[in-house]
Image 1 (tube, rainbow, N blue to C red):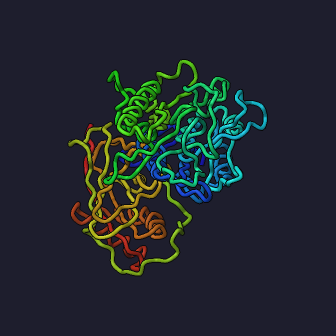
Image 2 (image 1 turned 180 degrees about the horizontal axis):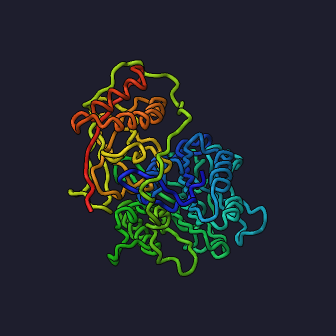
Image 3 (image 1 turned 90 degrees about the vertical axis):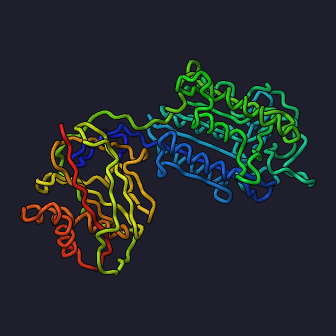
Length: 493
């Protein structure tokens, strides 16, 4: 499915506000345990932190993120993922993020495109003593050209060049919290404020690219050890980049926005503050860098990958969609016999009375077991033509409910909102299936059962739950373990 299409689904009483989606892509690389060169600490934690950040703040779905850590992050693995996931997997208009935390280095320029005669390079996990398997900046630069018409952000938390006192191959004791330039050192002839991936025109030539670097060319990137012994290590720059945006700590003028310029200023201030407390670790200082097209530095970085933009409301009576192909992620069927009526709870999180046009969320709690949620909405006095499936839908993955842990749906990652549309008496029906195979069977069976029960009109509000339960049990048999509950509610004009 092309997620760039205008999306829509009916959810009964509610219309889901559709979203203009782009199928964004992120590739996150973090390496601690190198095969031949000195190890680091905190890079895998950086990847974990960055993945959580772009999901919570930029709306990335987990399915839009690829991570490569340690043994996965070979030269071939990184370049293949860049080519297939970021380039081939994206389309014009998408937001593409490449993040790297690990060692960097410099090597002799092989095509005379560097003024100082050296290429910067990333060090994959299989970097060898003979400088094999490096990824030159030329190779990244070429790939960025393939991402024209995308909005691209590159974040590099690594050291690439400079005069330092340590080498990753040094036989003496090394410091795994310092990302030193590999294969020795040299006196950089580059500007002290020029970042490792600025190719003297990369951003101006490709105005779609934003580049953040942890340090200037003469500096080494550092791992933040201030949380020890109570918290994990993580890169100084990455942590402050995330904090500045997520917690709005970089919003110095308190206007509610966090601009690229504010992020740069904040990470520089906080990096220097870290150096003030760790002078031995921070010999050369820390000066984060930003390359961005002219005139864009005041744009709000929090909306860089904002992907949910309500554009319309779906009409209230689009036919319910039922999958005709069973989902077979799990081949076996649980043979426990009887469904449970009282272990599934659904609460409507909205002000009462529920007015037409109001948004609503649901809190779902399972008392006894884990399972996958199947949620329908319908008129409590209508027929099957009013039945709408809320979850799962084509915008969201199946929702897994864990025992004793309430789950709110839709959450901010679902890409939609439930908006009350049709005034009158309504009914929510929630089912919890043991596995995906059972979820598919219940999804296929319930509309027929609902039509059968509602057509008789021989029920009271108290008995509807029981009648639906027994009719569905008869339809699917007792080899499927499931739970069910119904929640009546009302929408008023």
